[in-house]
Image (cartoon, rainbow, N blue to C red; front, side, top):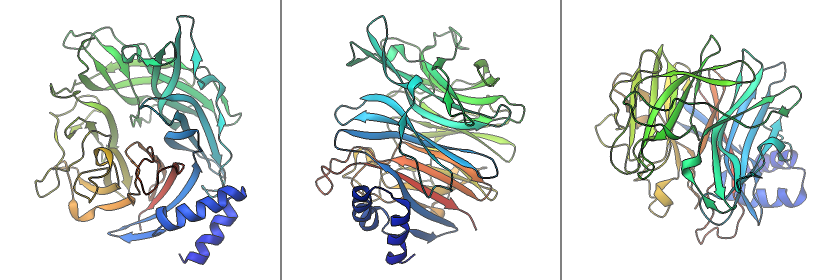
Length: 409
């Protein structure tokens, strides 16, 4: 795509004059330095859904597609304070009805606004992941609750598996709910502060779903155990049925932010850890092999740590979305940029290094909290909100919610 054509496209897709000018400067010069990337076998086209402002950042942006004669795309995102690490406030929604060319102005979802509870806690939904549930024609949004004592002191021990239901026909969102979990796990340890924040899930053909969940077993030690729970959803209520193997390591914060996918009749689980990332495999979706550290196919460590990874399937190939060390990115917090994609060997459970491509280049902001939306067997979208822009090269700029369209030939 030529610069002239790109500028024309941006003019067509941006209605606000001030926004258009800023986008052309930032997006053309920095984010869209290569609008169509041809490397290995995937084409990657990047655009911007929305930008933050001087007071707020957008975070945890993820997209769902609603099928129809003209498919509708729905992106949820959290408005977040520019100071502190978990300053989550209201959840907003933006919609596109022309394949992501134009997006509506984000509007707050009233049932998902941050609200003061009778006990003095502010509670808000966060780390959300929306997916269309075909059997009920509803968008199921799963994640976690954030809980702030007197509106400012976060209490992680109050976290719960949170969900909300959106009717895409009316755009009505029901009240925020939480999933009732067992009191103990299979080892007899208490299930404390379970949540499904940023967890990629699988929808089964019978309408049930596989929802990864993490929890603590000790109120004094923040060490997470990760599981995959089989759940039922009837269009209104999300209920726990059972879970299988329990995955944990006793270093750092354990294993957390798990994400699951189905590929070739098998299931694959990736999990974050403080100093590494881990993978496991299953034949039934809830009972998994022993977890092992992610590596490249040459045996070297993948180098992904302290952030989440997610899955993409395109044209019969399984891919992993991740960030890692060793990409001239020592200036980025936890090496959370650039955002990569590479093919996975499903038998050896490793990443094929020669297939690695950059989804979104590093641009002095983190890109760790991404989401995947399946468009078709040969196309998937990755939505990612830039982390706080603090580096000197971009200090003071507004953060961007970036949409990367990934297409297989």
